[in-house]
Structure formats: C-alpha cells, structure tokens
Length: 490
Image (tube, rainbow, N blue to C red):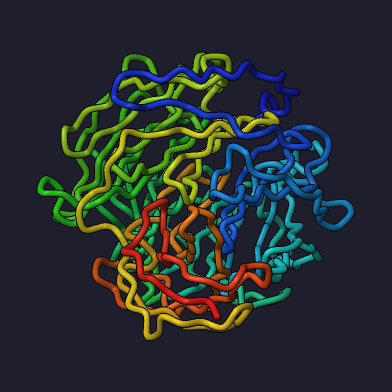
C-alpha cells in the first residue's frame, strides 16, 4: 500500500516555456475537478477520471474545439459510477465495440486502503454521455486491487488479480472465464505490455522459482496455447525487495537498430533501465539519468519514435523530471518540464497520447498539460486507409473502412499495474476546407493486432450534427494520421 499517495495535491503553476528542439507544453482549459487517469474514447473525445479530490466515482469528458484542438476544448460531466465505488489505481480499457468501458478493482476505494474487487461497466453514447453500472468480479476472487490488465490482439480483455497468480478473461456483463496463472509469485506491481506477435510481456518483481529462480526474470503470455512462459532474463534487477515497485514498459517503433522494435523498461526504486530487442528477444542494459528512477510512473511513445518518461529520485519522492529515451541513439536526456515538475513524484503522473500527436500529462490537477514533441513521424508506422467508397450518407452508421495498421504498432502508453490507457485503435477524422474537424465513432474492429502490415477493418458512425459537404477523411492511431482521402457526405 502506498498511503503517501493519498495527498491533496495543490494547484500547480502553468509553466509553458519551450526549449530548443521544439519541445514545449500547452495547458488545456481547466477541468471541473481534479483529474488523474485518462482514456481515449472512439469519437475523438477524452474521458478523464476525477481522482484524489473526494469525487473519485466521477468521470468528465473533454471534447476538442471546432478545429480539433484540445487546449480550447469543452468539458462535460460529471458521469458518476455506482454508489460506493470511488477507486484510486485501478484497471481500465475501452473495448472493441467502442461503447463499453471496463473499470475493475482499486488499491483504494472511497479513500480507504483496500484491494477491492468492485468494478464498473461504462456505456458510451456516441458523441454524448457515459453511464455506469456495477460489473461483478471473476468468481471466487477476493482481490483485484491495482492489478494490471490488457486488451489482447484477439480482442479479449485479460484481468490480473493483484495478490495472486490468477488472471481472467472478460466475456461481457458480469461474466468471466478463468485464465492461466502467471509463473511469478503474484501479479502485484508488474505490468503487461502487448508485443507485435500477439504475446503479452510481463517483467517480474519477485524471485521467480519457475524461471531459473531469478530476480531478473520476465515472462510472456502466448494466446496460441493460453499459457505463460519464461521469457528472457534481464541483465540487471530493476526492483527492490522492500517495495517491489517497477516503472513503465513502452513498446517502441522498429528501426535499423531494432528491426522488430523493442521495449524500454524503466526500473522502480532503481536507476537501472533495460531494453528488450524483439529481433533477438534479449534484454540489454539501457541508459540511466543520474539518480532518477521510476517507482511507479508513466511513459508514452512520441510519433517521432522517442519515449517520454516522467521520472523522480527515490521512492515516492518529489523532484520529478521529464526525459526522452531515443532508441536509435540509445540516449536518455532531460526535456522541458511542465508545471507539475519538479514538485511531484513520478507516481502521480499519467501520460496518454492525444489524437493530435500531443501527449497529455495529468498529476491530479484541474489542468491537463499537453506535451508538444519535436516534429516528425517514424517511417512506415502510419496507418493506411483503403476506402471502398468516397460517399457516405449524413448521419449514417456501420460504415466500413479497410486499412493497413489501423491499430498502429504499439499500445503507446504505459504505467504498469496502476494505470492502463492503451490507444492502439483507429479514430476517424474529417476535415473540411475551412479546417473544421469532425470525428466519427469507430467500433467493432475486425482485429486488435499491432503487427506490422496487418490488414483489417473498422466500422464507423457519422456524427448526426456533421454538415453535408466535402471532407478529407483519415484514420488517426496513436496520434499519427493516415493518408487522406477526399469524401462526400451527402
């Protein structure tokens, strides 16, 4: 338990000063309440959880303005979960139907330290509100707590139990199927990272007697046999026995140096980092940055291929610093801080890429800060759309759009066990000749795979308020836009 987390966090000054290389921060119009975890809805809006401020059963929605900008967007809500459920540090995912949100467990509930099994199921009205009802836990589970979760390539949602080896698959409202046990002592404090081949990676934070009795073990789930397997051994131990904390693990893009891409894993109460080369499937020591570490904390992948990290010294200590890992150069360097740093610790940070390619940062404040990374998109990672028609009826539903890499090549955002905000699914954006932006509502994708070159389709509904006319249509995934196609809304 991290009782030090339950602290009222003061309003922070908005430091919006850029540095050389174009990196800078921009503030979003203040939310109605303190904001922590964020999720990307499938109509371009951002769902944000009210956290640490006494209203942790509430969610708010940020919609972009008419030009697609979030800085000057509009807040709506609150949209409250059921009475009695107000969690901190929980599992979450937006399901492939686009309309269902799963929120499970919590390390705290109503401000009290527990490993609750309470859950909630949200139903999204496209372009509208969110409503919540109770979602029962897997049968027989006494804990979920701050356990990790993931939406697999096959579309199944896997939920971990914080305090046991157990996993479970979500079948739908109040229904679960038992999954395979992990090989480690328990799931607690580890995170899940989806790999391009459909496997799920986990770095252990206990000595794993099933994997060489090692303190440097990793393991992976293989959907082909529905089992966990011992993975490659790390070269350094990333956790301390006293706290067993771990940092984020971000899957980064392929390059000449890493032909299949790799994973950048930050240490917990440790300055060490590790890089998993997916080509050789081996770990190697990564760069370090002074005394900075990440005993819980966020990382997110920029369109230019660098990984943005929020770091701090020691265990839950203040003094945070934003940094960028460059996989090609093999470097880890400071970048400009927003107003949250250096006052906070890494563990209160949340990062999630927005459809604009900016990375949203929240530290339980009322103002989201948007990181503007250096421009550029890694070659070959953008989605490609292959429309079967260029004419759509105004307000129509269940239109089908085919494409390549519609889910991107990474889940993009990582924290570990306490926060999941994967954005590896397509959004559809329409821009008119006056640069007015509308989003469709995507749903029921044929695949959730992040494999390179994957061909799939998504269905989409048009916003009934969208005027008839000529638009440029593109898919946006992980903040990266596809090719544009001119379409007519009639």
